[in-house]
Image (cartoon, rainbow, N blue to C red; front, side, top):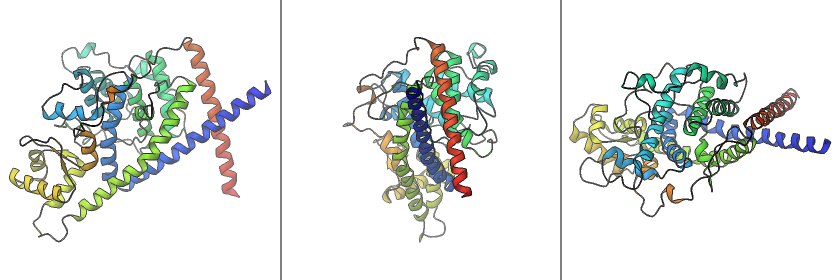
Length: 397
């Protein structure tokens, strides 16, 4: 018995160290984004697309990043089913402006369930029967929060409690809630309500500024090398998620550095040109909205359509933009990082070509699983407490 208890304690201590290591990686990415908000905007714009596609694929649906652009720009959409593409676009919009489920739980959950679950807009036909999450349904999930929790641990607690309270009705909403809670815990102060966040994006989520502070992407973490089930209510599911997050965040530290390099070159592109050049304004517009048409750029910076086209041509020559629709009319340009995800890549297999992910079915004994998860969180809390005490003693020494 003593050996079993010692092994379990050692395992939870290792889990606490894994969580601390991942929090350090996340904090580094967060610091990059805070030091240069435009870099954070570009990075999260790319990650929202990747996470949305991965989240839809975890539900066994066929969709790829390159399938999204035709749904926005018009064209052949036969590579994915219509439901998958629309789910991904709705999830992108939700992740770019998730709201604050801690400070404004009802507003945030209605936004997530409406955009991800395809529910009617407020006031629309059938809005009264939309099935939006009520405060009573949210209460058990938010009650799981504890003061002083690191952002990832807070997100794990709330998503696990919400999954249990909702009967695993919508795993995509659970994962989006995980990201929204994590971002809310990273935000120094609650947002103002989202004058920028909730503006209508004519590109259906592929453009527009991000109003979010999340760093961790659960669906991508569970899709590293192979699919693993999303199961925040099980000890094994939490272990899989943490392992995948460590891999993904380790890679993304380099990718946010690429966003910072793009901004450095974009801010320098107007140097040496005559004083009336609007090249810097055009570059800044793409930093805020990384996917635009010439007409949208003209509206944003107040130039003629012809002037916008000339500015875009100059940015393309500098290697700062790529045309991603590959046609002569109704063209769309994007920053290179997002273009790599959205532009057609014939040699890359679609996400749906992989083996279907394992089904996240209900546990044989939900109550026993819930009790085991509670014990795991309690032991993880104790391990984190011991780590805090140790670090405190070292600091005083």
